[in-house]
Amino acid sequence: MLTALAHPHRLRIVEAIAGGRNYVSQLARDLQIGRPLLHMHLQRLEAAGLVRSSMEISEDGKAMRYVATTPFALHLTPEVVATAVRAGLTTGTNTDS
Amino acid sequence: MLTALAHPHRLRIVEAIAGGRNYVSQLARDLQIGRPLLHMHLQRLEAAGLVRSSMEISEDGKAMRYVATTPFALHLTPEVVATAVRAGLTTGTNTDS
DNA sequence: ACCATGTGTCAGAACATACTGACACATGAC
DNA sequence: GTCATGTGTCAGTATGTTCTGACACATGGT
Image (spheres, helix red, strand yellow):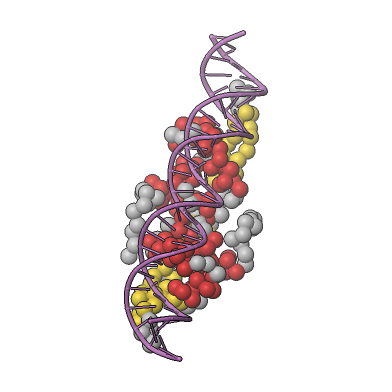
């Protein structure tokens, strides 16, 4: 989950949709990155539970995937890290709601 | 700074010294990893300001590097990420206290 | 002198991740 | 039909990170 945010592009993605949702192709244009690349980063973010996406049919019939941030909040301190490690939360298991 | 914590070994290192400082060779034994490897991870953590280290001369004359955590605290939310990105804090500049 | 302990550093292999350029499919407008 | 828009996925390459196995140096004890 920390690895999900450990990349400039992914941070910029969060920044880009923090103010409101957007759809993939437009987002790719805004961020000046290729769509396949954005697609991959979105997968990582979504797998970590940091963003959510939903397919919708626009007025002109196009299928569009809208992406938005989830209201995540993480208080990061040495003690929190220690507890998380001891609880085995770093081994991939994702406890999403 | 997030990239510094984005690795299992580094999280385990923080966990291992959260309860109290320790010196490098002992830490390497505790964590079951090679000393050069630990050395590199410590460099990354220290560069990010998450741990601090100091050289000391032990009673029997050996030079020993003790490493301890710094009391870092980071409230991680979408808005914080957005602000950090807009402020350009993801481009390497470290704003330590 | 030799061994066990501590320190640091380097080069190259091994691994993981990120990135690019195709490709395929669908829809509405011209 | 062709074009512009949207979607997704795949294979291969580039890049970056992680890891290992030497090496060098110092100190105290046997």
